[in-house]
Image (cartoon, rainbow, N blue to C red):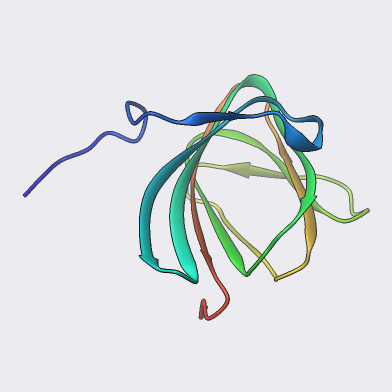
Length: 111
């Protein structure tokens, strides 16, 4: 058995899509068509509006923020909230206080 801390794993900064204070942390790639990553947004951070490559399940593990799809108004999210974006859907995540989320991406993701 191994125990890991999502807040201690090395990640890489995201600057695309006018993102600010955003970092992605690879966790697992069960298949070539699926991946699990952690998204870290610093206080005041934003993962700018971009299109999904596959279905994406976004699970807030710490902090709070707001998510939106396309031109829809932002909706608040907090610890325990889960958001499902469909393949090809435009979406954005912002936070004032900081946010840590687990993302599961796969075309065959069943909910």
